Length: 252
Image: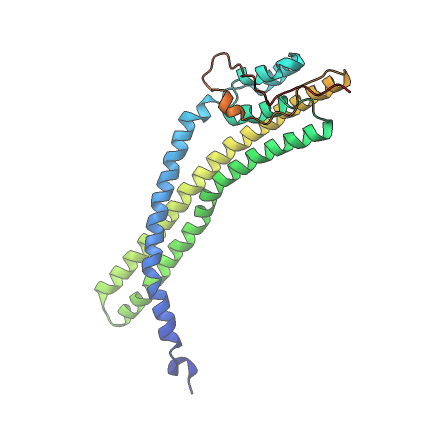
């Protein structure tokens, strides 16, 4: 007994494979649209965010080192850092009166939140760059089955149609992967620079707090506000608003 020929397994596999052709084509078309969207998004991001990142890392570090303890927040607010960098640094600078370990943990949390935000942005294009070639391969192989059958039956029309569909799926899948990979590489370079700058300046703020602690200077703590709502990127002065949530530690 020829189990393969006498069973329905070949027909079942054929039906499943051919049934996946339409969903595969739909997914490839959707990926093309999503990839084009991310290309447009990275262009917009360049003009709205990247081109405004003009802060010299050495300059801001020196400015913080030269500033008084109470003026660190103002130095950060007046810098040319990005909004999310200012927000993280101001949160830490307004809690410089915390104990050393607590302040370090807060700084790590702010940096970690920024890294998570950017990883989530990169996750989309990273996933597309991996999935698109696989879908393109599926779109290539599925039509080749009927094409091979058509070749055995000398049906040139069906064969050419199958080959054309297979090649189109391959090209579209590769185009999606290339676009997504380019976007990921561009953004990854930007975001690595943003995080490195944030870590450098954050370390300077933490060191400044350590100096104040050694000198017995009282600094503010218990700030839980949202700096991004209090500071505007285009504000020439960049001065912060006082908030009731910020207070100095009680004297022992």
